[in-house]
Image 1 (cartoon, helix red, strand yellow):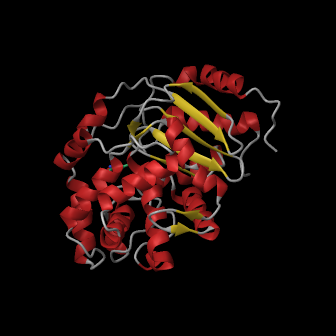
Image 2: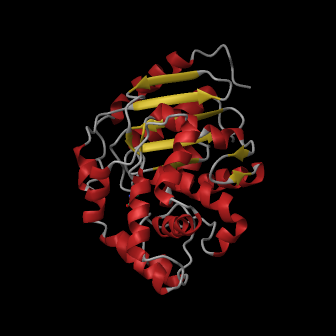
Length: 308
Ligand code: GLN
């Protein structure tokens, strides 16, 4: 199905040519002050087929803040640890609201719509805090193991910067606690959540780590066992909830399960074929990378390699 005759290097550079009219549109996230210090003109992409062929362009080896892409790794770990009991505390429906919305949580009595909005990720983080021996080291090791890269780290400067200004996420954490949907102290959960968001990875490392979801083979590792059925469900969640209130748009334009972060990264998978990660810090008003979304739309349109 993946056409071995296609020159993917040429395809990627052709995509970048077509992106030129969009260069300079949007802005980096600045509600986390440290993220505003990143060069907004960075652009990298890494396309990693399951057969081992990898194609890259631009700043594909430079690490950036994965932010909400971490929600896929944390949800995978929590799902592996406690199984479907997870869905008693966090729902599996698209939210149609911004990633840091408080409104829905009030209406739905403290059960977040899905694990990929902030409220849901805080509940997932609470599960990890209660079920891992060392939730800081264990998650980092999980991500290192998936990407095959032992030097991946939290960025303490980004952690401090986000903690300084995490008013909304603190509100969400306390609110969840008031509904009885956090077992641990809200501030401890918030700190751990912010560490997970601060993990830095390159496009190539992310694409490699996302092979887990593209391959959907049972994973035996030091955190949980993840079954093929669980991995299928994680892809379904990425497809329906990976881009907050722009999930329909991403699905429509790109046609792959994926997840974005306000660091400007997007990782996506075409099950059984490839994973891809793209990074460009300028975001649209929904918090998704403008060039990242456009690049993936062009990639699946030009290659014909999407699930729809
Ligand atoms: N750390 C960020 C926050 O909680 C992550 C948001 C995102 O990437 N969408 O606001």
